[in-house]
Length: 229
Image (cartoon, rainbow, N blue to C red; front, top):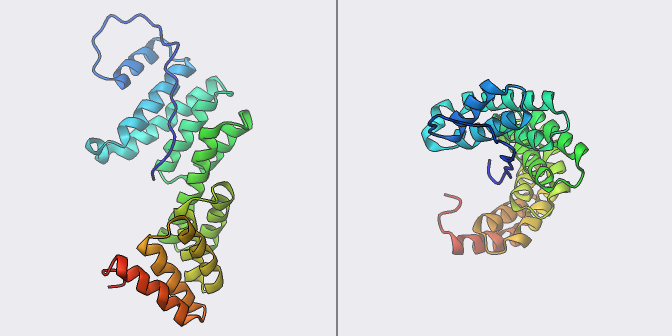
């Protein structure tokens, strides 16, 4: 997943410290021992764990760090149920864990608190898309994939990858004309993208328009001769 907006509020952490610390996580965890009921500290710790989890050096323990982040963020929300940033970060952590339903619910809770929360809107749209891809590619559940992808499209109608995935899902489902519709929209956004041209050409073939389909495929191969091999 890419593009998630991360907002962590570090203000208000004015505790006196007379120790050396090596990173934000160590700092926040030490403070939590002193003030365990601080929603801001729990939120900051969760945000830092998410930030550290996506670093290549932490790939082996990524899921463990994310689960720990979830626990801190849930505690922040328990302490302060109106903490919209904690819901945002909880949604991010669950997205990275592929817990898409939990991620979506967290963003919806953030938007319930603040309907104009742009970061939550953006991340919700991304998560609908990611869930659609996951259920289509990993689970082979086209109905569920389309359910999420349609919601992603409603929120982000000009997002190329959502349109591409909708075209793929309908194509695999055998609904060639619907695939043509979404691949055409994707091509409008990226008119010189070889993959978009090739996808539309293939969909047109399947929709019974081989001559028109071949024109798009030929254009795609001019840009990228390696396509289709």
